[in-house]
Amino acid sequence: MPRFENKGFDPEKRNRNNDLDRTVPEDENYYGYSPVDLNFNNRQRKSDTRQSQRNVYDENGINPCDIPTQSVRSNNLEPPQRFRSETPTDFEPSANTRQHERVRRSTDKPAKSHNSSSGKNKKAPNKKGKLPKMSVGKGILAFVLVLVLIIVGSVGVVMGRINYSDKIENEYVSADSLESSSMVKNILILGVDARSDENAEETRSDTMMLVSLDAKHRCIKMVSFLRDTWIYIPTLGYEQRLNAACSSGGYQGVVDAIEYNFGIKIDGYAVADFEMFKVLVDSLGGVEVDVTQEEADEVTNHPNRYGNVTLEAGKYKLSGEQALAYCRIRKIDTDFVRTQRQRTVMSAILSSAKSSNPFKLYKMAFNSAPYIETNLSKGELMSVAAQALICLSGEMHQTKVPFEGTWDYATISGNSVISINTEENKEMLKDYIYNKSSADIIAEEAESESE
Image 1 (spheres, rainbow, N blue to C red):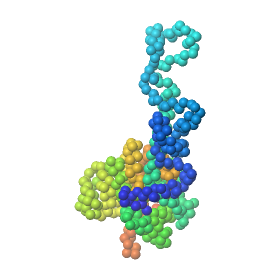
Image 2 (image 1 turned 30 degrees about the vertical axis):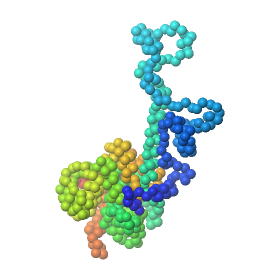
Image 3 (image 1 turned 90 degrees about the vertical axis):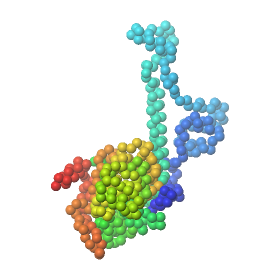
Image 4 (image 1 turned 60 degrees about the vertical axis):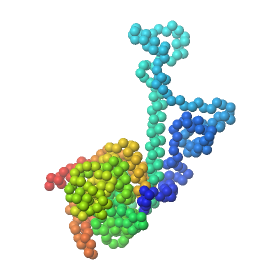
């Protein structure tokens, strides 16, 4: 359970992250956090006074080009020459070359050499305006290497700030009976209003949203599970509201309940506190949402309920505080509409991230990481991120469970709940996640709106 005092960061827990990572051997450090010094001149100048620091880089193999000066001197050789940055003058033709070019242009014929024997040993002059091929190749290679180092280093830093939990197998249903695909990653997003003195078993999940990264159809599908849905809770051994699964079995209890009832494989979960939600939105510079007058009045007129947040009707960018209040509105309509607002904001976040530059995305990930807890390993997170890049190029779709026509309001044991046809929802959810393309979903939505 992530704790959120002092930005929710537990240094001791971060130090245990590598121990929990199932994909990285303990004797290797693929996600090292030592800064990479790409200034070779600076490293050479400081080699005598900072020999111990150089040894750290040599052990990790970050800089194979850094030749230890101690071994060079022991052979009575000169220290390796420092790298010198190329300048524009390095590529300017010489005076003789410029004269040679003028002769060629005036006669439109190759210039005759007055010393053919010496000319054989000379390289042909470079054409004006073109850089030497080897220099261009080296420049591109250096740029790619630097870019890779920056990306890997950034990912490693961000991952080191996330809170990791052990992955536990669902003991209530066999993995073979669950629908799955290598082309689809299902990540369960759990939003909780965590208190400093609570643990996972004392918390009820306020938001349960399955984000499916469908690489086969190149799209993202978001499915909200309504918390008042009345289903069998395996950790309890009887039927109850879906959100009770968290208080009885922790975050894994929610995974167990959804897999057991709806037959789809969940690859992992990510838990976020309300504070993380605000940081995420603010790091992106806000999200654009169309707010109705009724929604604006509900938030603005109830400061104690929504933390002294004010909203105005209209379409504009919401701050983190405003977006959170918007998602928490629950008194003016049903839980169906409430989850619709949550998916609207999530879609806005993904759209904003899709159009953001890498530096803004890094800031978003860096600031949000301490507020996230997940049972995905670092290797699994990298795989999810790679698949997300493929899917972000396509459409984003959203729906809810229960599906239309599969539920009724009911009162059970004095509780107002949503009674559903579990088997029908199970088949519809499988079809939506694994079989339907963007064109299929858009066509169905258009048909539904026309009815």
